[in-house]
Amino acid sequence: ALRRLRTACERAKRTLSSSAEASVEIDSLYEGVDFHTRITRARFEELCADLFRHTLEPVEQALRDAKMDKRQ
Image (cartoon, rainbow, N blue to C red; front, side):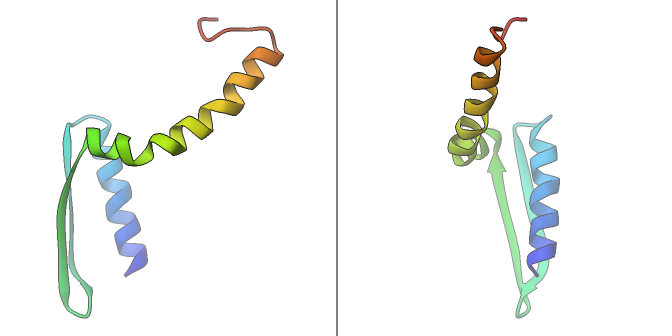
């Protein structure tokens, strides 16, 4: 079940790279219960904001260490 959920979420993430909204639909996810939901790109970005921020910190530090800025 977890693998199917992860796969469906990965598919939705890829859809959100080119669309404003994506759906996640998994038949019989757990004990015969279907799972269906929709997520917007804005909500996905909100949920991932901390991860994005933490990912950028080492990149920005590496740029500073190399005496470069984001525009180079």
